[in-house]
Image (cartoon, rainbow, N blue to C red; front, side):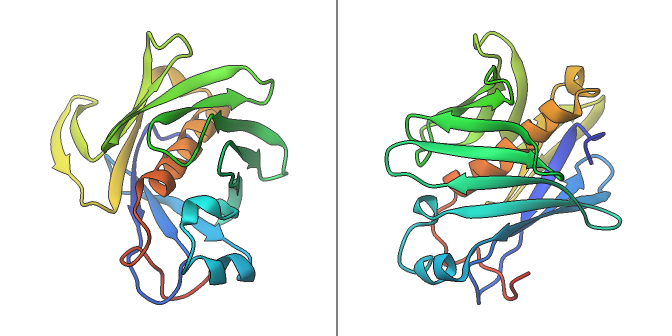
Length: 208
C-alpha cells in the first residue's frame, strides 16, 4: 500500500450501525490496496447515536491486501479542548501523532513524527475540502486531500468524487519514505472523520 502516492478513499454507505469502513485504492490503476475499519467499544457505539463522533474515542485499523494484514492503527482519544491522535505500526510502535488546539474543528492540525518533530501542517478550508499538507514552515506542499483529481503523473484524469469519497495525493519526494506516507495517509482518514457530518447516511450494515 505504501508504495502508492495517489489514493482513492471510499467510505461505505449503509444504514444499520455506526461503524465506519473505507476502501483504499490506487487512484490511477484502480487496484484495491486495503481497507480502514473503525473499531469502537460497545459503549461508544451506543453513545454514537446521541453524541457527535468527534467526541468519542475510537480506533481505526488499516489493513493491507491481499491478506488483510494489519499495517497501522489510528488511536483517537477525543477531547473538547485538545486532542492527540496517535498512529502506531502493526507492532504497536509509535510512528507519530496529530495534535492541535482543538481537533474537532475543520481548521487543520499538525502532524508530528515519533521524535516530536513536526512533519506537516494540515491546512483546511473553513468549508471543508480541499486540505493541504504543508511543511512546518508552510512553504512547501507535501500533498493534498481533495474531491477532484486533475492532471497527475502525466495523465489527463479530470475526475470528481462524490461527497463520501476523496483523493489523497502525496508528493513524489515521499515515495521512499513509508513512515511519512503512513502518517499522511492516516491524516487523510482523520480528516474525513472531522469533516463528515454525523451520521445518518454514512453508516455500515455489519460491524467488523
